[in-house]
Amino acid sequence: MVQCFLIHTIGPVSTLAPGESRVLYSRVFGPEEGALTGADSELGPEQRRLLRNEKVAVVARQVRSAVTLSREASGRVLVETVLGEELVALQEADSGVQRLGRGEPWTGERSALWLGVQGLAFTLVTEPHENLLLAEGTLKNITRHCLEHLRMLGPGSEVLLKSDRIDVLLHRLLPHGQLLFLNHRFTQSLEKELANYMAQ
Image (cartoon, rainbow, N blue to C red):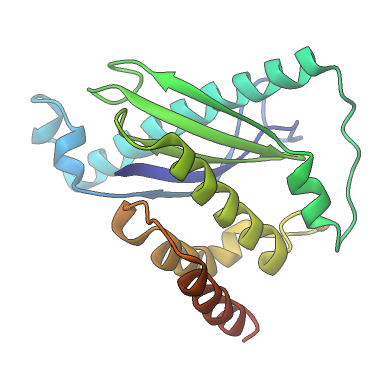
């Protein structure tokens, strides 16, 4: 099962300190009680929300560090893409997987799969026993739809204003945090359904 999906910045943002990452969108799947320790279970709803947001921010910082290290090690220079070249940006995206140990930030181990596209990172946090190839394919599919239909790489792109469309993508491609094995026929039907919704 997928624990959470998030979209966050990995490039410099003028309002943030160096090395910081801003979470633009996050969705946590499954019961939150399983992610809380004994002392945390007595917290009120607002404190739980803040704790969940802090856990997501910890993952975003760790992924930002991993993407930065990967880009520095590869020595590639980022070339800004223009609107309409989303698929090129996706093909040139950095990707990786990172093991999150106990307490980093959840009580159990997790795997974080990430895809760094320009100044954005798309991250899936999964249970350690999940099929990583299936999770990677799902992450690339979600990222492709976000880039193509929501134009996230364009100037003035407001991810925060498009959260309802991202929710629909996740509901179709990652229902309740479950990774899906999709056959070709079902994938075509799903693609058509998503294209019709995004065209509205």
